[in-house]
Length: 256
Image (cartoon, rainbow, N blue to C red; front, side):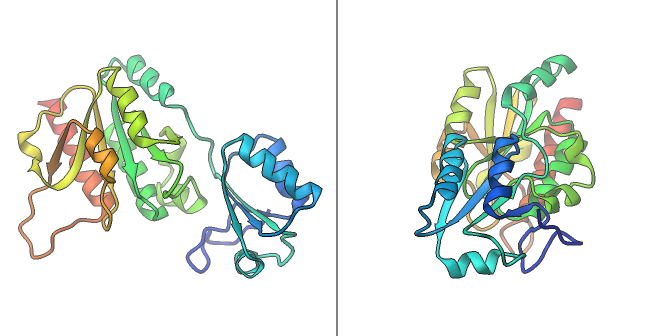
């Protein structure tokens, strides 16, 4: 396992990067949660094929790249055709979040994130989720940052107390949770003002990235959209800031 002091180098989180066939295979076999696996194109030998089978069995994101790309990703220079990125923390199940809400005798309060690829944003949102009393954070498997060491560091310890689930399809997860009585509100600058929306009951707050926002299918799965009043010259907020404002509007409404 390759680690570096601050968890970041050239924009990448390297603190939980595993290189080499034996090391990666053992990580899979030990049950470690691997967020993403990079495999060198053209590698067809037994050990690499075994690793690929393990990745597919666990529905791990698998990306085949050329040797040059793999070498750029490598820290040790001895990747042997495979590099894996391991989650810093174990993921929870969505059902665990609902069970926590029931245990606290509170209506479920979930935060769902779409297109959040910046680990600092994810870490800050997890911190906000903990302080606002949310029962968990749900992220998609693809096009999203996982639970890296930078996320853990930015969360300022909140990741130790906040459940985070990773799902294959965010829109499908929303539809399944709707059947359990949860309403979903999507953050959108064109939505009605957040003060006009009723967010007291079982609620799922959906936040997208500053650039792309929430994807179309996910937005269409939501029950309504809300916007944050803005008086300045720019028209968007950082994702973690928007999540904080909306989360605390939910807190305010629940306390009133």
